[in-house]
Length: 199
Image 1 (spheres, helix red, strand yellow):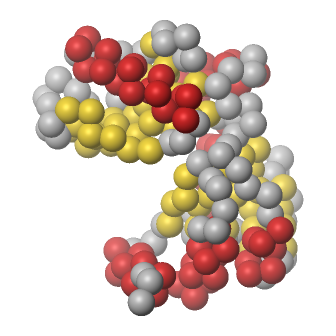
Image 2 (tube, rainbow, N blue to C red):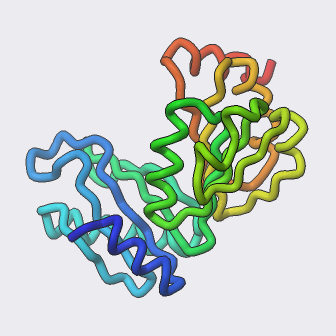
């Protein structure tokens, strides 16, 4: 099954689904990267390889669909799955328009997200680099307070410096979102989290 094509079909129908992806596995029968789609009626599309695990995954996905809150769960010993709630309303905000943002925006458009890209550099955040995306050229700290977010909004922070990461996260963490991701080296991410840690 072509997961991207199937997700596009479901999004076009207005379905809200849960895409479950294995992100870590100590079980030789369950491969990292394995994906299944769980629909609102509890039906499963795709296979992980072990029926009992798939049933457990389905039950968890149904609950997550009701909550509309994506998250990672250890579904059995050593098997971690990321449950991603997707709908035709799903939106992605990418903070930072550097080289990593290009393939991320393209892939997310292909699976049905409405994508916005925010950067303070006009030569980076522009429609020519990000076709079919909403591009915003503004300081992060100025644009983010007024950017609408809700339980269908995914945010990825990949700015050019840790000080901009901090500016973004200080605003984003005040809002309701489906998911917040920060991309950077281990050292950089640790440094940003240390700055954000309540004193």
